Length: 256
Image (cartoon, rainbow, N blue to C red; front, side, top):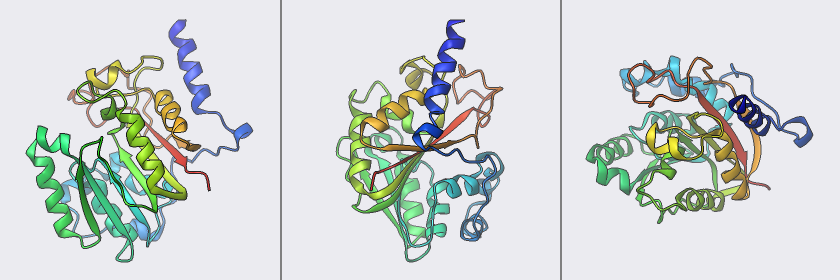
């Protein structure tokens, strides 16, 4: 019963809607031609394109309102899956800041190698490396996108105020009206921050609370990557659940 009540409370937080003027996206949002063209870009590795069916990047970037000519940031770019798509979607008049945390590169050199490879292949991609504490994003961004990495801000090796500092920097860097879109693996509602380290998940209610505390307005959520069959307790790297987790998609806007 207690778990059901916590789940209901979390759903209420995420669903705070008509009274606040929040709209919810359809699970199959139309994919604009410039994003469809970016997905069809021959420069994309075949192994990345093969993951599109599960990751739904076209619908996600449509939800994030990506347009040609925009200045965007891929916050924790990882292997560059979204960096490549964003580069083609914003086009030659746009720019993508590909941020790879220094902490990640120290942990595994391939993170730095991935960043160099992607930045070297796309003229409109600017690499950025810094610790979370020293993050300094470009001014006037239209969008900051972070996918499956928000929970990392709460890993125990990092200072406890890491998420607050990153959110504050994202808010500062965005132009008025700019968007902050967050995708991550959902944890059990009400489970606190322990799942971030143990199973690489986070309760979406915590994310919303922290991001709104930084000054953002909640714009909406999308059920695009939800999967109710996920029990929310398995480590996301467990082969039995990897690639099939329940993921939330939250959109926030910097007030104009």
